[in-house]
Image (cartoon, rainbow, N blue to C red; front, side, top):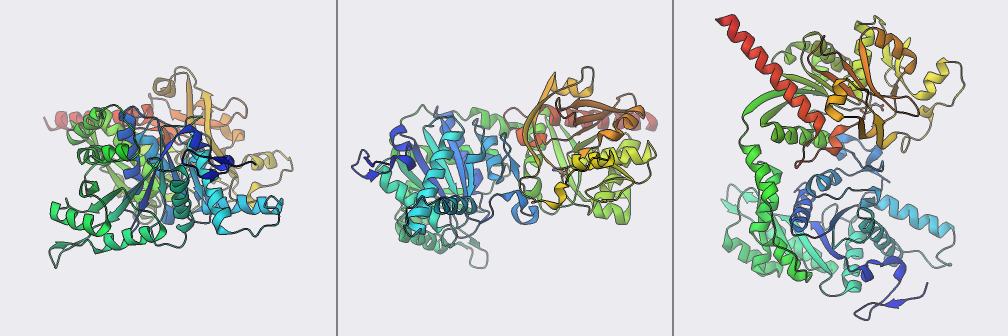
Length: 579
Ligand code: GLN
């Protein structure tokens, strides 16, 4: 491919920097000192401010690990796997991005070192490097830029005004070096006022000294400058506001203007962060650096949200019965979706995390004071019997129940066992030789009908799931149609399906199937008639991925409303009985 010259006279290969012509501006966000400082939320908050100023914004997450995607990683280690509309299993930060801005993230918005190497090695095998020695610089770093360019275009089907690129890991890690080097090269290639760097660091408070310490920040900025990157903005995370004299000290040592040293302190709701950054002028510093002159910021939506979070009129307690209950990161989108429902129903939702194995050991006692029960998605056998007991408790005691993915499969097993009396009903995920596989891989239903299909169980784990958005019709007259209308379009991430062979039996016993996929006839939504239970609703998909703070989500709103109304009628009944 022939080389071209960019507007500063640098020669570049147009194949990997088309964005030069499109004039997209870049903001790279790096992290220093420690992980888990909230880089994703900070990047998304900056994006939200820029969007409120009328700019077209997208976000990208670059992950330095070698796994091809987080799909096969343990939620204990990696937190939730966020699923995009186009069915990619991505980093949970993409969930924050979709909750803060209007663009929908796609597969290309998140990539890993594993994907970069996979692509480079494939090219090398095809002889595309013409016998050259393939090296980290320039081949890996060029490939990173090709992927960035592709990612920038994906959300808007064209180039946005600004792309905020979050680099995972911490500056100083070996793994993230090629990403930082690629960012440095892009800065050089694109020239002045095209790229800005934001560095998020920790300013710890040492209680024994009674002081905030700036040294770790100084060192992490030095590390960044060694690589050739000078941050334009330093975001200093601390448990408190950083006093001006400390900001001046950081400014001097880190070579960043005083006004660009921004304090990011702990807040009770993440939806306060856009306002916090804007109040300290962060978006103006970035726009000045990038020579952008957008409209003034309008953060009124965010302040309305914060107002609603802080002044709820009612309160309910929902028990979330799960396996990774100690790690709320594993249920990030679900917890956020319940918070959004809180905002839109003026009802504070207290979530009680209940370990299903505790129910197996100590019984249903822990469920007694709950206003609602929810069983979220999950994998593997451990803890499933406890979840089934919780679902039975909800069904028999008229406690509003929401089952999501595994929570629906287990509700079907519970119904089959205790209502249809199929004693050993189970999912083949937990018991391969169960007598009643009411939940199984589609290939296993066919086995039962005597067809000899290969079992997906023996094949690779990555990429064998039903993933991404699917739009299906909803049966009129059902609770589902009240919530969703005529169709439901939600994202999936699962392997096992309710076995159609058993559905007539389940339906005859009162289970209502309110949505099925049109082509394969797979169960999407089930419910119980409101004549027998006030609110019992299960979905095979993951509605939590499409909930946003601005609009909430119809299913979570309906659930919280049902939980509240049941609580209120119980309270009324107790009052009457006391009289
Ligand atoms: N383990 C179940 C399956 O693979 C459910 C998955 C989930 O809840 N996301 O089908």
